[in-house]
Picture (tube, rainbow, N blue to C red):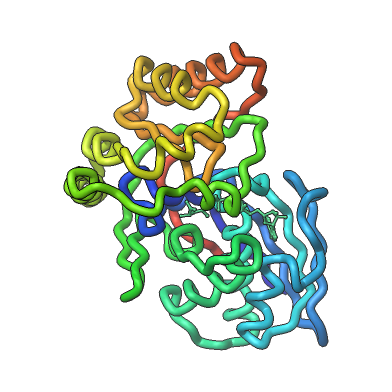
Amino acid sequence: MLTVRAPATSANLGSGFDVFGVALERPADVVRLSKADRTTIDVTGAGSQFIPEDPEKNTVGAVAEALEAPAHIEIDKGVRPASGLGSSAASAAAAAVGLNELYDRGYSREELVPIAAKGEAVVSGDAHDDNVAPSIMGGFTIATESGVRQVDASIPLVACLPDIVVSTRDARRVVPESARVDQLVETVGNAATLTTGMHRDDPELVGEGMHDTVVTPARAKLIDGYESVREAALDAGATGVTISGAGPTVIAACEDADQRAIASAMLDTFGDRGIDARAYQTRIGRGAQIF
Ligand SMILES: Nc1ncnc2c1ncn2[C@@H]1O[C@H](COP(=O)(O)OP(=O)(O)OP(=O)(O)O)[C@@H](O)[C@H]1O
Ligand SMILES: N[C@@H](CCO)C(=O)O
């Protein structure tokens, strides 16, 4: 029996749609795995009533199949599904790291990323790597066709999760099919600024680089109050604000000293619209850990 803690993640960070991701220090899924003749799954914790235990429908089932590693898998969800915090990916990442160890498969962390992404394909139809990569490798990750580049960073963040459900599948339907060249130029500049900020552990540069005029405005319409919450967070000192993953979580980069005020401002602004929310004062952290 093995226990793995795999962190929630925030994908895209505005300018890095389907490429950038960060591991969050908290929340996280805790997954217990033991060898078995066939895969069975138990789910408890945040939003567990909405998560299938059928191995064909749960992200960990696809990972067990890909690794040919049947197991009894107990998932304690710290990350609510359809949150924009890589809930389904955290379980898949934990299963990939845990089953690799349990069955002594010998894959590196980077090699486990496409294996865990097979789990993501079960829920969203696409095997995108931008949540599983940081959940497995930690820090800031750049996931492309050529593989994953990773940088350790420790930027303070506030992730505010409103009581609204946005599924990744729905949020992908509103992504524009094309962008203008001037938007492309702006996006390249912002993505490069953000990457430099991660290397320097500089919240100002990271926040500036989170700006995006292509995907974020289309998706913001799915999150009641997004613009007001964004403005409130910026007024409270955030260096940048965007949608986390496919939403509805809104994520702010900041200095440590401003975290608490930003969390309150975001919660109050959702509250003014009658929307309950929860704010995680967190930071970029490490990848999945085996206990
Ligand atoms: N182990 C799992 N954990 C969480 N959700 C799961 C799991 N297995 C299957 N699902 C299903 O995946 C869907 C949630 O995944 P989705 O990608 O929409 O949300 P997310 O992972 O929180 O968001 P994002 O990828 O935008 O950060 C739900 O329908 C849920 O039932
Ligand atoms: N990059 C993906 C992450 C969500 O899982 C999206 O934004 O659709």
